[in-house]
Image (cartoon, rainbow, N blue to C red; front, side, top):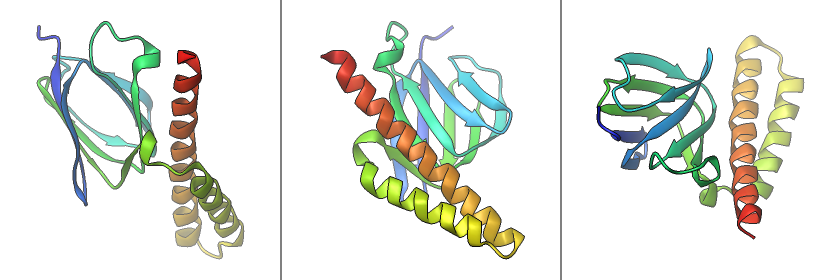
Length: 147
């Protein structure tokens, strides 16, 4: 059993992340799943939410790297996890003020939705911006735990 596997995160803008890692936690419609080396082959939907990456086996939870995603598809074969995501943002790329404003606008759109398509679009924006704010909060917690 290998102690790492390759993780590639690809968005329409190109390769967003690539590294050999020990564990990746993904949000899915069934709940969060953990991917470890030699995971059984799987193709799964990834929900909007937080992706957490443990680079080394000995890293603690406060050493996890987090990214926000708007969802996508994951392909796992035991040696590699390839995630095709609509969007992925690292904590340092998230402007918390703008994410809060976008969440409020999305809630207004949801409230004003006149049809199912508009409602689904607004709900997706709410999920996406909620994930962005969660990643920003995790980054703040990580900074304060080091002090």
